[in-house]
Image (cartoon, rainbow, N blue to C red):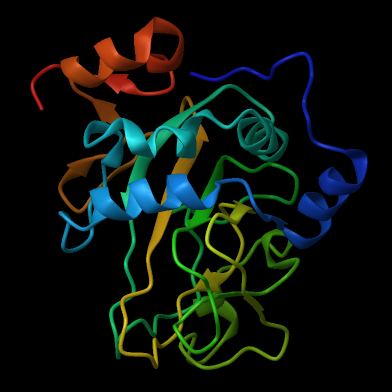
Length: 235
């Protein structure tokens, strides 16, 4: 569980951006040497992996960055817990998905948000390699894309693209419309997504209990950081 620290590191302008647009882009949060170490670890993982927190200490920055964590708290407004640190590659020639919201429940009233995600760009994100698209302000509409659009895989007139250099992070409201786009290059585009939820919200999907740590990870992180996760020693 995470509770807001006395010093938030989130400026008034950044809070306004999160509230208005539903996302905040923060470049240069991971330096090039660390990106290299993360890429080395990810080279052993071929596809989607929902609990990277148990894989390597090289991923720890993705759930221990102080400014990011306080940005998440600003969105959900209550104590929160992890729903997993996920490897999300976009393979060459793939990636098109429907606009959706990360929170799987019914739409919430504006201002009552129970989920937040953080996208970490491990590769450069461009429109050519299938960067994420999002619809600014859609988190405040209280409706899902499928309720409004005939085909959520098609372009939305209000969408924008999250382009950025490797090491950039994007805090985004779990109720924001977003999706990946087609990777037109010959290279895999790499991303890690950290999902966060209010403590009272349970997320079990695709057969995974997201956000759990094993005994080795709990020992590595220590009691203060381990409280961000569910602690199960049998995985």
